[in-house]
Image (cartoon, rainbow, N blue to C red; front, side, top):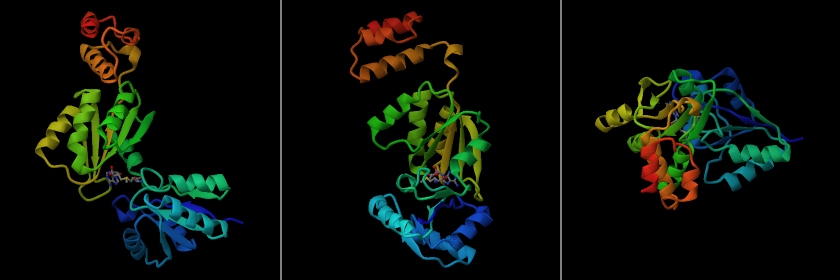
Length: 273
Ligand code: SAM
């Protein structure tokens, strides 16, 4: 009978967030598959544990994953851990879980630290419906396509971002959603210098132009106002014209005419110009 793959979350900053179940699982499994064994060994030292480890990271998902699966099929149990937070959430694990699920290998997810859930809970933004968007792509075209697809998104949106890319990302987000869109920046969650900044995209951009961003960030952005309650503005129309033209649609074509917002004469004249 196959062994179980345990997904074991690890602290996102505060070591006190280790639960008894996480520690017990790490102590009990046959081996640990770690994103970076140098990081995990520090956690194990903190727990007073010495355990066999293998590496499973984003660059060896195929070979490393197959090695883990072979051992699971042979009856061993494995704990998958990443450097911080929940495995498989913007972290290695997704493919391994899918592979195990396909082979009927039991997978057990242990609840624990996860930056997106912690940020959403503290954000003060609506939590009833939300969408997790992970990291924006580095590639300009993919990044723009991602943001374009979110323009009318009414659910709260959650993004991960690294400090050195934060200012550029805030600018792109302000371009996509407008500078007045409320955002909560959650920095260094659970750590000594935890900071929650509730502001707007425009103000956040201006602040971080002056103050170099440091630490890890989650951005929680308010969704768009519901479409039926919101009048199309001239800015909406201009952005739409830009997007359609960028996508190769010449002015005055039918695909432009079919879109909404034609109630606004200034927008129509922009499109037909
Ligand atoms: N799997 C992890 C999780 O569940 O939280 C996320 C891993 S992802 C590679 C790393 C990103 O998570 C960081 O760039 C940052 O956006 C966010 N993050 C992780 N720890 C954080 C913290 N303590 N405070 C704020 N954001 C954090």
